[in-house]
Amino acid sequence: MAQRLLLLALTLGVLGAACGRADDEQQLRVAFESMRTALLDRDYSTVWDFMDSGSREALAKQLRDLQGVEPGTAQHAAAAASLKELGLSVEQVKDLDAGEYFVAILEGLDRVQPDLRERQLEETRARTVTELTVDGDRAEMTTMSPSGAAETFTWVREGSGWKCKATSVGEGIR
Image (cartoon, rainbow, N blue to C red; front, side, top):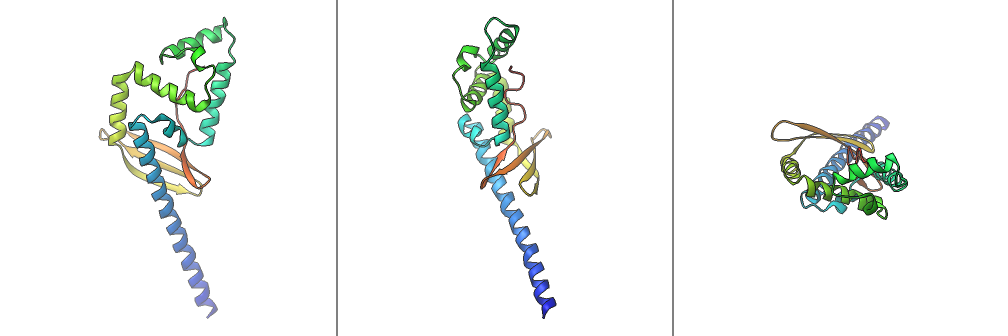
């Protein structure tokens, strides 16, 4: 009798873990589709909502550093040149918060590189999830474009939802 109870408890534990993984995978797929829809709709503030806290803080630090650059310095000139490539100026970002800065970067890319952005968005639209691995509060999602280009995204559980770790938004703007 004790062995049967132990076997039942172990079986229920394994089934419960499998159901938990299936729920996580479903939540991740929904989060990915929601983020992709926001990106395709150019609803960048919603995309920002899908970014994990580490990515948000990294961009916030980058923005604080940028906002602290003294006019007339070499740093200021470099920052101005980088921002100019996005159709922005140091003065325009002085009063932004990190979320607004994120939106400004993506809107800037839309303005100054419209053909490239359209190709990127078309590729994003056509991507399919080919692999999804969940390990506790962390997940790796690999997507594939029709051309065969694979891209892996890292997701982390924050609160009751999944957030995506940013890879390069704002990289190089100092």
